[in-house]
Image (cartoon, helix red, strand yellow):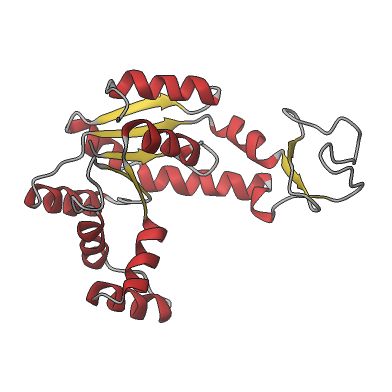
Length: 220
């Protein structure tokens, strides 16, 4: 079983892809991880990718498809894979489908974790953590029991917020995500492989929805 998981940063792709990996025995394939592994391997594709990356360019679709071809071998993905971060364009989706067909494989499910932009901005921009121990908090969902004091280590005034969690930054990232995925949705919908899951639901509910959607017993 091969899955493409779509969703903006903060939608829970990491959590749910971990569930899919563990429940169905799939291999997680994130674009960045595959590129780093290819470069580290010293393969011809890895050398080409390294040269492009070091020059500040974008790795071509041909190179990326080749790296994915190597990553999805039966040895590396005996039960299938979860692809995160690729494809990003219709051209990439078409190239991916062609490569998979040549390898006797196909995408079984394209799952989008659907989000409400306004709620996502509130969810992400409200996050902060303790600079001492790393414990996570949220303005609305998990405020500290004592103002300015970490529940875990007791540090006072040590809370920090990530720069890319600012509301305006989150809104921009969502805008970019929607622009990126917009052409992919009709492409996969026309092939009958696209499914939407409410990414704003509690984690357990999203997991249950994925189980119902995929309908496969856990891997032994």
